[in-house]
Length: 304
Image 1: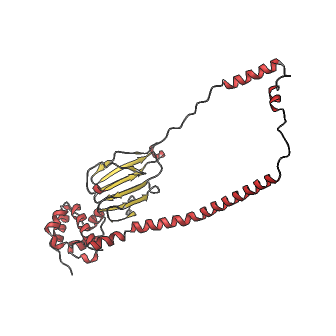
Image 2 (image 1 turned 60 degrees about the vertical axis):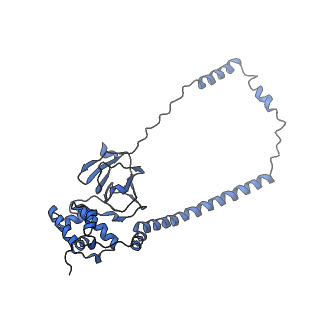
Image 3 (image 1 turned 30 degrees about the vertical axis):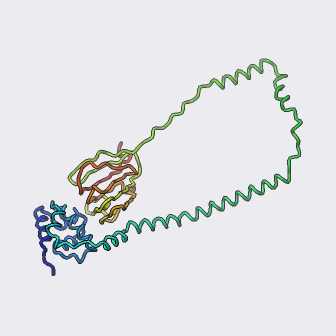
């Protein structure tokens, strides 16, 4: 049985003052409810490690309006220290790295049949060309055209034709050369557009138009909680497109949300994350550390 630590009691008091239940806090922070209970009770043994304990406490504090850095100083006896070995292990076990490695190997296996077929086709072409050259060398053309009066025949082609026929031919050539050229009309190039963003508390909604794809790339330069989810519908919670967890500096997260035409990006620390939409960097509409970036793909039918 576990009892509330001073830090856990302070966090729980702030949560109740905000009027949030544990279920509400789970939806806000995306931290599992059992971990939130463990933080309030000081039961850190159920968590993956000390690094995640500090990260979850920071998320909890920001969600209930407390200064996380000040809490760590005031209750440092209640917060475990992070070991360097644990940080290295957390980074090495990153699911995005395993997923990227497996994706690279699968693409290589898919491309192998195409490469083999291409090499086989090249061999067939080379062999055919070699046989054709050998056959041509054995059967040279015996007709000698060097003594044909080609220039004489060309220069006297119109000698026996009536003058009016020659003039008519020259006029037709002149008319053909004087025909106006038809201008080439180039179709306008449609470029991608991202709206300025509509702010509603932690949420900012951006509409992406002028394109039929929604490829997202997140470049992380510092520790932050991060995740991508679908749109929540009535009676159904939003499902994850990218696993919610703490990401480290140097990690790059890529996801194709075209099929969903929607993506909700949860940023625990937006200061250390750059968001790219179809390789175009997104400009944040609000200067907020913890915020949700919502991207909606607007098609041509919806615009009309």
